[in-house]
Image 1 (cartoon, helix red, strand yellow):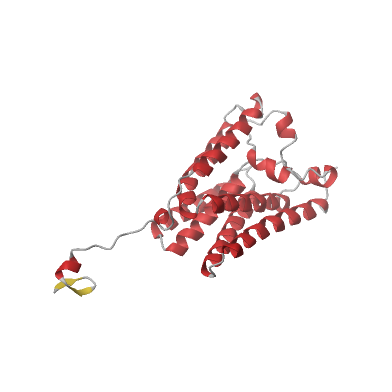
Image 2: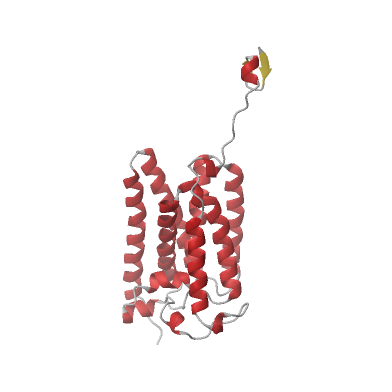
Length: 249
């Protein structure tokens, strides 16, 4: 018998090591094609906004895509432009805005998508997106808002929840630092949507908790029902709140 940190083991057993699994290895890896596709859609939309956004930190110029896509309560209350709850999350104000968002999307997408699979990744992305749009209507209903950060914060919330559940402490700690740092920037710098970030973070985290509960119950339908319920509730609440917002004269 051989002495080991876990007690006495036979010589043959002592030669074997316990394999360490990472967050990506818990599920069969699927790649991160959806992440790349989402980045491509965001970049294509950015290019379609016109030359006014091609500055590092400048105010975007007027364009058809921007004026018909950005989000504010008045467009929903007066014109019933409900699509803005989605389109606003695929538009960006300038080069720094899209570069920073796409970098974080790429980073967290490479981590999360292979771990949870493409379908759940898409569901989580849009749960964060709609929850972020609802957060915009709560926190700054009369401020024109664009950006993918609500959906991206949803992925960050999902990645944290998943890492916590699987006991991947190193990844969880890195995510805590990233989330806290971004929330500090959100509260410190002007022009950043607090509602989108906090709403997206909550939406993505709740969607992942729903999927995890479905796994524990061995019923994927339960997880999808929770994810869809978050999206529907966020859309309905955003429309209701926008319709009851006092608009500037």
